[in-house]
Image (cartoon, rainbow, N blue to C red; front, top):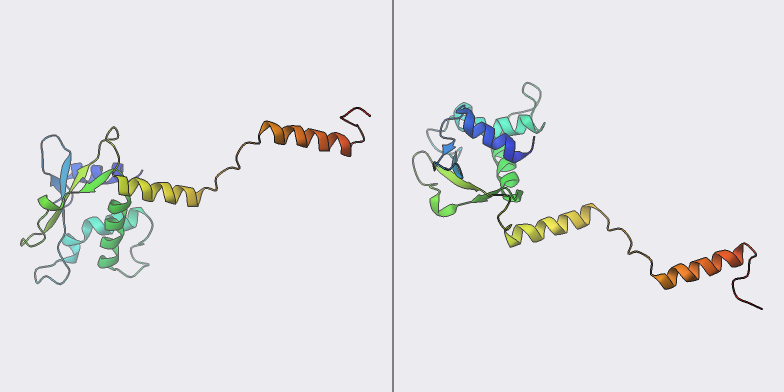
Length: 159
C-alpha cells in the first residue's frame, strides 16, 4: 500500500485524534502537528500517526528500536512533500493554535501535477533508471551488417 492509500485509510479510521476531513468532498484533511516542546505534548497521542507510519514503513520496530517521535514526524512530512498525491495548503493550516495542525489536499490523478514536484520526480526517475541507449540508425545497421559480413569472410561489395 502506498502513502496515499495508507494515509486516507487512517483519516477514515477515526483512530487518531484530530486527523479528519475538512470538507464534505473529502479532498482536504488536517493532520495534528503539535511540537514536542509544547507543554501539553503527549507522545502517545500527539505522535501516534507519525509512529504508525514509521512502523508501517519498517523504520521503527516497537520494543527493538529507540522511540524518536521527531524523526517519525520528519519521515511523514518528507513523504508528504515528495508525494504527487498530496499538496500542503498552508493558508488553511494553523500551527499557532493550542491544537496545531497542517491541512493537505488530495490531488486528483487527473489534475496537472505541480511543476516543481514533477521536475523533481522526472530527475529522480532519470537518475534511478538509466536511460536505454538510443535506437540505432539505419546507417549504423548497414555499417554493422557490413562489418559482420567482413568478419565472417563474406564480402558485401562487388570486387
